[in-house]
Length: 389
Image (cartoon, rainbow, N blue to C red; front, side, top):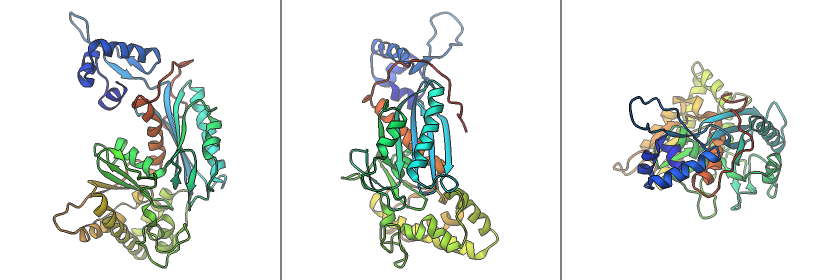
């Protein structure tokens, strides 16, 4: 019932019975339960005439919300979604201008979000932290983050759970997987079941969506494409090896190629590079070379995964056609045989908050799948004071 309301919109009880295949009696009983826990509300009917009007049921914007957090090399980000997937709060903070310790920056942001959610009388149903690296199978421990410096065994999960008083489930997830989920629900890959999302930060990772399901591999480590040996064999990667793809197309590779400084976050940095490329032929040429390397790696990746669309996120978005056009040409040139369809290459629509948005979506999944129950709120409230920021 919740999934129907979320993905197909508000509907009368009769229409919900048709959509779900449940009897009208069962639907009415479920709606009553959802009303009791403040998950849904009934719309005011404007129907005129005789007979009992069909009253639409819709998901409430409050009090049940999910919190998504992201910690990355240059920034931390947070997004709060309600059951309908609407953004109630969003915030991004540069780590370059604040605390350099990634865990301190993350916990500070988590505290600020928790305070706003609690002040509004909202109740988180889940909290997910997106991290650029490998995550343990229990989704409680970071295994490897070569660019972030969080050591194996650091109980990041426990630090965040303590902020939220351990009142809701907390898990850790890969940032690329979270961003892929977000773009498939809200952005450039909406409505598509087969897509690949490529992060564009200091590190490069991929989120793989196949038939509507995120593919994470036998050990949860699928998508670490940044360490494929497709880059300049002399370029040193954050993992300590040379020749990794991300060492040639990640944010730091962009800055080396263009000889421009790093600003407060990847998107701001890339926007400045794009402006310079309009008048500086050397910078424009460097971006063409970077785009060709993106297309080269994607030709290998898409030959294996065969997605309908590839979404370039992160810092690639402000660069636009400076990278997109040469990447498309390189991808098409290397897509053999000629009969094989070339995937559509698109820019992400969610910007720097894609991973945090997807993390918040992950927090809703247990509720929408029926694995987690909703509890009646102690006090109803309106949207957080930071909604829409």
